Length: 138
Image (cartoon, rainbow, N blue to C red):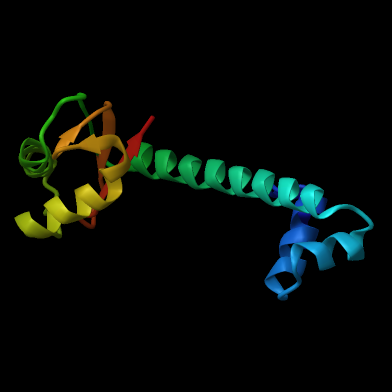
């Protein structure tokens, strides 16, 4: 495997592979000649790298969507749903969700940046030609 072409270090991949094989942290530490706390730190760093890569893909998918718009902090989810449909109409994109499904989809994507059905931060929304809705929040 070409590890140098990923966001993970060789050691992170090694630890993840052993953990996926069912090894405990202590067993991995023994295998690699290190401590279990070091193995734990390597795993945390790998998870951070994986999360950054996932967020990068989210941003890229949003940017590459043919229809994009920004929604300001404080926007209620009902208004966000209205904006998605309006921007979809403007771009000639048929949104693949009915209203309740779209609300649930958006809430599941944005629940970490929402409080009481209102956005707590600005988000970017992208609409794909297939009618899917992508979001990216800072």
